[in-house]
Length: 329
Image 1 (tube, rainbow, N blue to C red):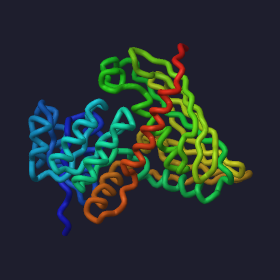
Image 2: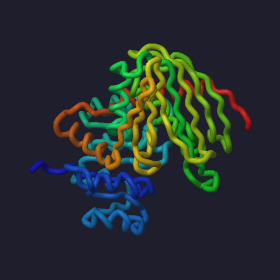
Image 3: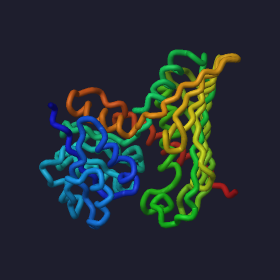
Image 4: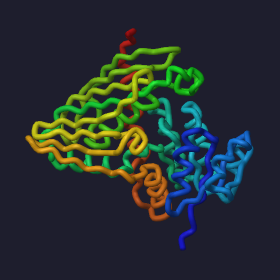
């Protein structure tokens, strides 16, 4: 039997507790072996399903643990580059929450460290592991909707009542674009293989972070040139949807980003007067992400979301901010 990859988590973040730690525990060939937290009481929820898990009092102590093969980093955005580099230097494979960096130029040093160490480092961009997104990519690139002419996306939620949330703080790399723009921007790139040619944006800020943003532009790639539009907000009712519009059909993804949390993952394909729907009610994209990460480490299987892809989404975010008009609503 293949020895499982032993995972450690840097920090007892809520998202790690509710999603990634259970996914590591459930994934084939993976073991949740350690958690780093300065508050031992916060480890109790993790030990409920991983009772043998070790608890380290600091991130450095976990990185020094020779029994740990890989680390998952759910820290605030401004700490991602620093601790990804430290983990690679400590000989650990790294899966870091998105965005792995706040500027595209920062990824170069992570790629260099990855290549120098021979370790796997990647952003935890879980949606590309979901069959909903792989199906959308196959349909668009095979011409199922004809010539792609427009892509639009929406991802919104409301956290205005939580001013202490790291997403509402500029000093921790907060803002809706860093938090959820990575999905509306990166998913369009994943499905189409296209990159932005020009971008414009309107952004509304509160306390220095974007709480509403509309990005528009033109993208070009293997599927040709098409227009693009996306809305992200941390001040609107929950909504998420992605649409790919061609001259012979339309693909609409429901629950494209939080499958089984926001709603069931579905793909609607409209061609003429016909509509077909595919559903994936039992798929856990976080478990698939962990398993694919492990397969890449063990077998050299190409990882579905390499840092080179992540760099493209970070560059698109840079472009949005560089061409943004600040507005009030």
